[in-house]
Image (cartoon, rainbow, N blue to C red; front, side, top):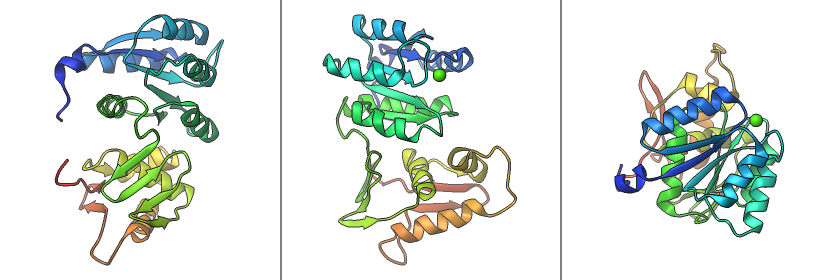
Length: 236
Ligand code: CA
């Protein structure tokens, strides 16, 4: 994957999450990858820790007892503390997500998520350096702005519905990784059941059509019998 292991194994992550089960699973996943992890379940304590200790990344829940996640973020940025922050958001916290990015969060991840995804986000942020390209996903000539939700292919603006946008974002986050229809349903629609329709296929076709520069061009590949993946560039 090309990341620096010396760097990886010395990274310290602060996890701020009041749901103890989630906090525990994040800690376990990160520690298994060699990260050093500090956990707190309370917003006020989180703020104190973030101000007085040095962390490589803070994973920050929004709804917390005491100070909430967005206030913590705002206050840290006001004090010019630029530690990279990944917000943990609920699917319904759409406005908070955008507000968080505007306040200076580097990224967000929507619950529920696989810990591998969180680790991928941590790598992405530490690779690019805090604050750089904040809130923009870029792949070749396609750019997706997570704050304005503006999508561009070269100079062409692409209009997607909110659901189509979420689908594209989900696949684009992990180029080359194949997602099953079930995973896509869970993440984009929040269904943990199969609606017995070809919902996912229909949406993939739509997004594909809107993104395509020409008839042969497809950024989202079908992996027969498995699901879909966002095309990975050869150079990556
Ligand atoms: Ca919470």
